[in-house]
Image 1 (cartoon, protein in one colour):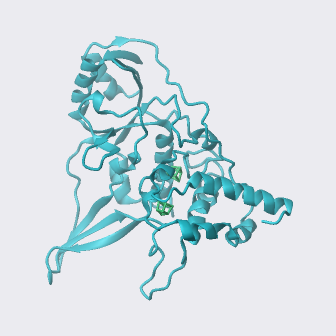
Image 2 (image 1 turned 90 degrees about the vertical axis):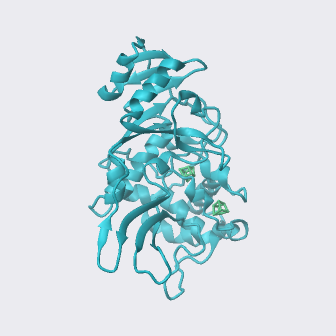
Image 3 (image 1 turned 90 degrees about the horizontal axis):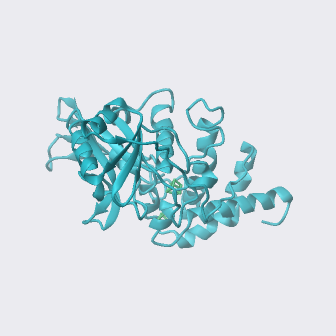
Length: 350
Ligand code: SF4
Ligand code: SF4
């Protein structure tokens, strides 16, 4: 069903939705001076003219999440703050990113991750129509510029909102404000300035020679292992668990899970001090191959996990390139690897 409403009516719709949902959208965070996914009340809070610095994952996979509380003798599972659902305004690439996180948390090892699932199952998505690419986007190369996985879709113009509404509950609010009906079908980005050559890794036997390439050493000098590229990524899922003790000497506290990053120097460090990956270059190699081989090898082979057979983990949002304080481009790292593999395959000196 298609609708057309002015901003006043859309704000009434948001007010009605907020009775049942926490509504998240890319909005200006004055404290952090960034566009992040924040709860919004009015349509003009949604930032459209620049890409959000962080992905929508923080709306349903929070940076820090208490799993349980403990004392000497008891463990009590954390509870959600309320029964409300989560409504997320997201662009097509990020909706595809959600499908990738779902694979990792819901379908890994045959068990759904309880703490992820209990928030994720509350999520409904309003797709933000995205017709023009931002500077760092390469979603078309990744096939993530389109999606049909949404409960509603909107085009927000200067004064009005056009909506396609599929979800009955969301649609009720449009009827409530007597929205006029219209034909609206969202359009998608067709071309990006950036076009990625995807590394052609056709066989596991290629992984060792790829891992041994001197190519990775360039990142030892450049990367400062800050992990910023992972925090903004909509498909990075790694976390750490930490016990927070309430008082010195106390045995009561809480266990939290907090985002972690495969680019941190200590990410693979074990209790004895050993590290599986010892250099920033090794971390970059791991990240590139995870995003452009491992994930697809596990989840995208046969289409049985709800993502396309040729899907990679990376959705081509380019946020990591925007974020890196050392101006390291993940796009260039992947594109460069594709060229290295081409050289390997043709027998040229790498
Ligand atoms: S472009 Fe960077 S931030 Fe975006 S999905 Fe790919 S790796 Fe993550
Ligand atoms: S943001 Fe840049 S410097 Fe920081 S870990 Fe990522 S690649 Fe390295």
